[in-house]
Image 1 (cartoon, one colour):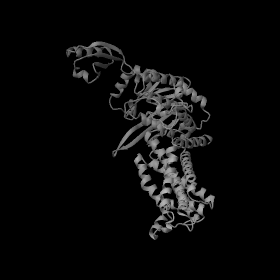
Image 2 (tube, chains in turn red, brown; image 1 turned 45 degrees about the horizontal axis):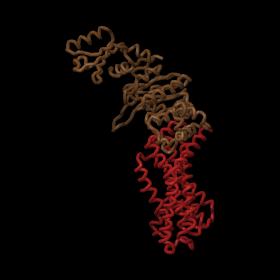
Image 3 (cartoon, chains in turn yellow, green; image 1 turned 45 degrees about the vertical axis):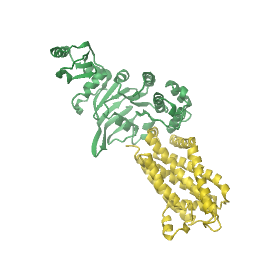
Image 4 (cartoon, chains in turn orange, brown; image 1 turned 90 degrees about the horizontal axis):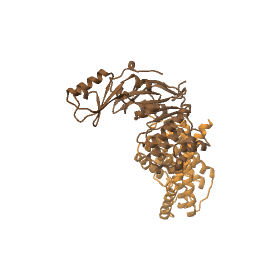
Length: 255
Length: 311
């Protein structure tokens, strides 16, 4: 048991070391992207778009961008690590070890959460100078950050297991993750949408992650944070169950 | 208790809509401390068998165990006892040699392994590359790291899947000295190789696979003694008479014919004379493992009854 814990800890350390060694690309670049979004959208839309009561648009945008960065980078970490190892063949170093599917899961998802949080903190530290930002309830911020990042880390693992080529991961990212994050209310309050698109947005679990996260800052949100918690919790449980199942059967990694 | 036990192992693949039988009822045991060779032509099933042992592939039927631990039901203990050197020259480009070894130790739950890692680096001639990134190493150096990674958790059973493919003579010597020392210290070694002189020099016992079945399993000395006893070698510029061409092995000008007694040697010479051929540099020598291997592989399709088994 001790050896197993130590093995999982090593894998998580290796996964963190991997992204940290290329932190210019894995941390600095996404922070810069988020800042560019803030500068452009903030400049164009500040004072023109009404969101929550007297909350300014740039202040509203910051938590959305932070959470979007957390989610996208958590996904990128596990998915790109796994697909690289599969394609270059070095996954064999891991496949021959006694590590259980639980150890793989905890390590890959854990490292994804760390990368998501590191990027999220980076985005926050840079963007917070652009607009006043209060923190109404830090617990919601922490809960939604961790749950969202864990879900995306697990989803990245699923995508990494499923994909056989880099372009399949890119397709997963561009056609599923990007639209779902962009259409989740990062840049707008879904109350500004026509009723039909509001209803569609309510089917997107990413919306609840961002809305719940934002609630931690402003104490107000499009839906109750408890509803968001329940939906994000259920989505997380489903993705984790799928991920653990695929790891247990060695889906596309053990023939 | 055997170090490795294969019991009736079979593997079916689906390829392009039809079933391919990669392994068909393979059974043999390897005893602790043995240096065992697994030989066979490409596609015979060697790597599939080793992949099943390592947990990379699942057998369709049968069972495999390492020191009594089933590789499926008790995989964690089985894998802790195994060190696998994979055939492909793979590496993780993010890390240095030492980092790769520390990480590999950690996967097996072995911490504070610096002294053993230093010993491995020294023994494999990697000491001055310890802090180099894996990407900067030559192919031969990467191969050495693969061996070090397989041994980093001090496994009692070591599996080398064609470790000397494309490796220069010096590294081959270093590698074999290192592995032979480990074997003398009590480690069991299972080796697959295409270099039959290596297998002849190193392996106490050999199994030969053909089309997913064991077609020979014996002590190396018994295999050499029990099959073709002599080998005629000569050089010739003209074409061989047809009755010889069918059983000779021709490499450029060099012709090799397997014979079993003096009468057969005379018969070959008579055939050559009758055809007007003039062989040069004629030698008649003892068959080596390559000759045995080719004779077995060129033999008729196998049946289980033909398997030579001796422990």
